[in-house]
Image (tube, rainbow, N blue to C red; front, top):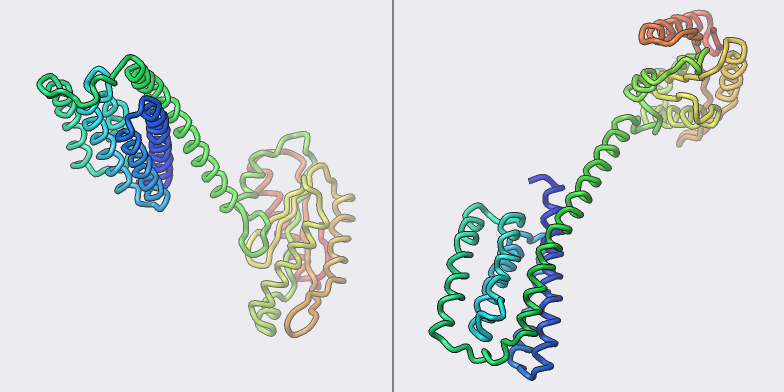
Amino acid sequence: MSNHDKIKIQTYLSTMIVIAAMIHVVVGVYFAIISIYFLVWLSVFDIGVHAVTFLMNRAGKTRAASLLFAIKVMSYAVFITFLVGVTVNTQWIILLAILPAALYLDLSKIQRICIIASIPIIVNLTLFLPMVYEPPFNMYGDVVLSFIFANVLVLGLITIIVINIIISNRVASLHAQEIDDITHISNIDPLTKLNNRRYADKFFEKLTMPQMPFLFCLIDIDDFKKINDTHGHDVGDVVLQSLAKLLIQSTRQTDLVCRWGGEEFLIGVPNCNATVGYNILEKIRKSVEDLQVNTATGKLNMTITMGASVMERVDVNAVKIAIAESDRKLYEGKRSGKNKVVI
């Protein structure tokens, strides 16, 4: 059973229990008014049982709570029918509560079959036996009490339908939110908290003509392997996080900033030509050069090499060509001395 199904069942059962308890409150008040205190205490006992069932359900013991709820409602329907007679219509409560409970709640297949099979047996017994047996409180089974239970049956059926719709919609909403959260997590690099390559691919698919020209820039930390070998991978992680933070601070929300892989990062700047792009990238390069990363072994400086290209048209092949060109220029910058922008 999925987590969403468990949430649906648990919420549905809790709602059923609350409704049942409220019915006992109303009936208990009525019995108090007509001075049948035995039935008042019976209502109090029933409310207590529902409270226990509610707490069991909240504690995660949904199957046991479901079974207890089913047994409790059946027992009440039978017992109260023998006390006040069939004219009050309490015997039909089991159809109202047990049938949907058996269909929706967390019961085993055998329990479900037994409960559903017992419904017609119990209903028929409660209809037949009072004919040869005089209920002790039959004189109080007047039109008022019949009216109360008749309305409970009608309103209960409507409530069950509405509750099921509300819970189903809520569970569907939770499921959709969970999918959104998973999608978001899958698009984020866990170390730098930047978007990852998966997100970048989706970003490229949404590029439109008004965003032209579009600047791509691949960034690589110079001598990153040496940093890891000399200071350890923990320091290397701090360096990556520091550069990621600087890149976010140096770009706009409409720009693409992602960790491309390893010590490589990708920047995408819409509506940016080569001249403007070079100035932006050079400013970032200088900021990185001036940046001092705090580590356990002291302050650490780093430099980056940047290879950039401008895409003048939009399609999948154009993006691939632009990134490949950026990669070629990045390699050119590495080969010619590092710590520079090549565009």
